[in-house]
Amino acid sequence: MKKYILVTFTAALVLCARAQSTSIFAGGNVSGTNLNQLDYPVSVYLDAQGNLYECELYNSRIMPFPANSDSQTNGVIVAGGNGSGHNHNPLNLPTGVFVDASNNVFVVDEYNNRILKFPAGSNSTTNGIIVAAKNLDLPSAVVVTTSGDIYVADQSHNRILKFPSNSDSTTEGVIIAGGNGVGAGFNQFNVACGLFLDATGNMYVCDQYNSRVLKFPANSSSGTNGVVVAGGNGAGSAANQLYNPTGVFLDAGGNLYVADYYNARIQ
Image (cartoon, rainbow, N blue to C red):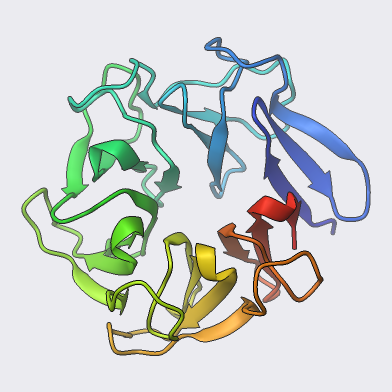
């Protein structure tokens, strides 16, 4: 079976068969606001049915595209799309999206410093519910477990926070990695951004300006040291180096994929 990598460009999402050709999956029609146009897609989420949810920074919206989409396929707005704002149905430069098994859509509303949850079947008029906000500063990624726990990369505070399933805007998160100031120690980050949880609870974090990916065990805390699983050899373009990585994904075979931002490549 072929393995595919989804790559984001300024106005298109491109599906790449490993060591083979590429094809446009969504967008590719110049930057714009039409439903077959994108404007700076920054993250994606693929659900179990093959629907691809893309998060657009400059259009401040979330749109899913069905399996087998191409450049002519229209997306459907399920969150945002009302310009940048602070109420509960506009977004302000969102940077991340996650969809749970019930098709609830969780959005990292970065410049509003909050995580919003939109119910299944939502559209541009639907109000999101704040499920995490307290003491966040430019959050960058969100992951939700099957039990409903919400993991947030709190970028400017250089930490990963865990919120319970019933959290709201007043709920305090628990630090489960980092939170020890900016640094290169194994319990520190220098801009925590990309985030992934595997089936056993291990957590992978892109430590952007340290140009590495750290792995933390389940039930870690602010005192837990991560293990470098990619990069960590200074910023550079060699095969064992990263340069400001921003996204991370682990497939079912245990292969780790890293969006190596300044090297303009996926490793």
